[in-house]
Image 1 (cartoon, rainbow, N blue to C red):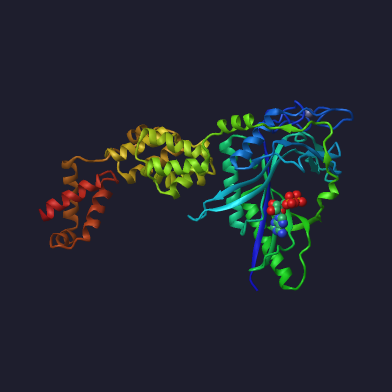
Image 2 (cartoon, helix red, strand yellow):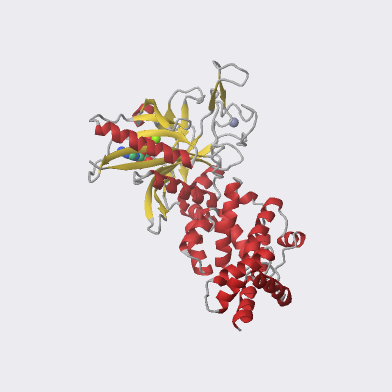
Length: 479
Ligand code: ADP
Ligand code: MG
Ligand code: ZN
């Protein structure tokens, strides 16, 4: 029997407000443990939350950017549970009336777009962080850091419409890109600003009903999400093939061993005893506020991709790669401003630049080569100052040193030789050294020209203008 996977993702993204959602404590990452706390986020008796309007604005924009319908009167609820990192004994979240519903994210796939529905987006406060064992050699001790408590989050819940680990990964990359473009979250995965729970079940192909799902909690890298899902699909398939049943439960992913393992049985919504948060009034979002937020939305990745295709005439594939990351799309446009050959620039970025970045494990934002310098380099190839081959060497040097192409070319004496006399001299040498091949070419064997030109290029250390070398050989031996 063949099985297919059914996957729904819940993403928690930190909204990039300066202060927490219900108090004025800083949200800054990397502070000393418990530095960013006050009686409100520590959940002292009698304190009252005050809603941070900026958090609502950001959540609203996240909803609009993902095409959600806005709940005109949404509200907060209490989600009750006990855990040491949750000092109040409840989390303020949205349950019955989330700020947004019925949105969507469009995956480009390999040319066949697929829409994944977004069930809901709601706002909530983050919990604190438990730390087990310390670096002083006390493995038995546990600590809790409340700096994260009360940091504003949106939870974005997808419909169970994802069908593979690869698709889950694409969904996350696309969603992250939308949130980054919208500038509501920095989506820094290492700092936990973008985390994912993956719900996975399998069913026989052709069956309508869903199978029982397992939920894998808090995965913070694209690679691990994909691996955890692949592992779950395999695990559940084996269980069902053996005639057993998948247990509905919450699991964790162990990146070191590449496996998921059971954490606890799955709680149901009624376990949380949700009820409306009595200390906060409902949030009314009128049409004017929606219009305002909409007007402030920047160009989104999908729109930018379409514009790159129509405005620059580059293939949709290129446009997709270049717009997936906002900073990369900006880099591209700055480069075009200097050297206006969009496809040449795109080729260069997609091959050389992205490769160097990947090798050095760098983001485009810390690229040592500025877009202006890359534009200048391509100009130098275009006007024949250097050859395309030498340009690659120059580029590597620019990447290593951050120098301008001009400086590198001068320093290393790499200017292309287009002086006919100088090339003639090299050609004569090559003919003298390789009389046989020269004769073959003279008598009509076209293929040897590659060899002959290659010899000249070698002698000139790659600096001879290959087009000119070709032409002069022809004139010399066949003219
Ligand atoms: P909870 O908050 O308890 O995890 P939700 O109803 O919010 O529950 O659903 C969580 C996620 O689980 C959603 O993304 C949904 O698409 C997904 N989901 C629901 N049922 C299944 C299933 N049978 N298989 C896989 N994913 C599922
Ligand atoms: Mg869940
Ligand atoms: Zn506080």
